[in-house]
Length: 144
Image (tube, rainbow, N blue to C red):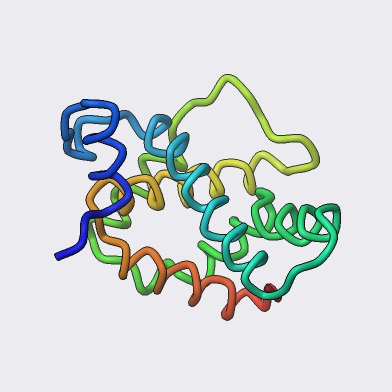
């Protein structure tokens, strides 16, 4: 079986494996924001070689809080009880910051979505993560 990105990183930098349950929801959201951004950037780049500013605009439209909020709204019925728990913990976490150009409701839902992505990443549930991202984009009507 091929190693996951997380395994490659842990091996290269000699860090230990930690269960996602050991992290706070805001730490899960922090890593989830990065991994979701990487997934979207990868898809956008693979859709065609174009100017970097066009790639950035497309990616930005899909990773902003409003888009993530719309995605999670369409996915709630599909989440497992564990995933719902992670999402709610992220959504309800008290953050010291707020995204620009986002309502507080969208920002909180986006934080929950990012926490869920972070959880799935750390738990090496790549197939589930890709399924939820694709479903969320499709159901929310967000174009890649």
